[in-house]
Amino acid sequence: MKIYVVGIGPGSSEYMTPQARAAIEDSDVVVGYTLYVDLVSDLTSGKEVKSTAMKQEVDRCRMALDSALEGKNVAFVCSGDAGVYGMAGIMAEVAKEHPEVEIVTIPGITAACSGAAVLGAPLIHDFAVISLSDLLTPWEKIEKRLRMAAEADFVVCLYNPKSKKRHDYIDKAADIMHCAKAWDTPCGYVKNIGREGEKAIVCTMADLKDNDDIDMFTTVFIGNSATKVINGKLVTPRGYKNI
Image (tube, rainbow, N blue to C red; front, side):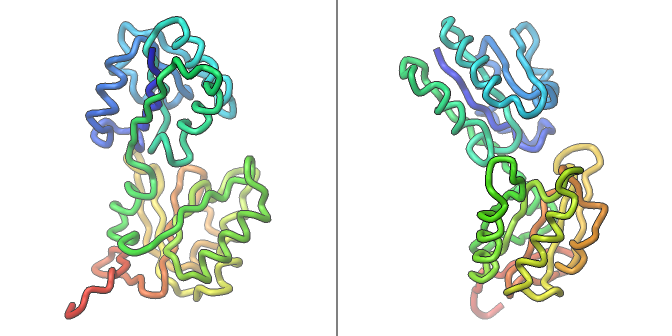
């Protein structure tokens, strides 16, 4: 009995790894958030499918565990990479009393990588990935991470930059990072990465504020002191000589 915790990437089939596809095909049951299960519907024919709405992560883990304890192989699908803001960690916690169930993490392409590819090459040097969602992390801790990442001159990739309830969080993040980053720092954001309606914008940090184009399906990239725009693409130099 196995639970494959499968990162399916941004959503479209060309972003899914052969390993992820093979894990789903090897499974008897597919579990996940409704949207993500729909995205792999071409692989679920003849399989038992279990899904829930958002904010029911623990319930989905228990569904997966219950099916595995029945002797079935389970594909627990999530977007991006299963180990980056994904379900691999919580699945391990829920199944901790059942070492007989093998938990196999299947990596996928996370938004930091797929979004960076759309924008150009902003993550070529050291970078930090920070989620602005305070559902599970106190805002005070997020604020500290933003400030220290800015002071350390990391390129910063922001997940969950804005939602209806957190409409001004990207504005707050920009204000915080202004402690060490100039308003004209090259930045960019990508909406609906790898899905219909994909959109990429190169801008400055000042342009991130009061920006109604940014939503919960957007990944934001804030450059470091060396990041530049080359032929319309966002690029962070690695520092090679003689270029």
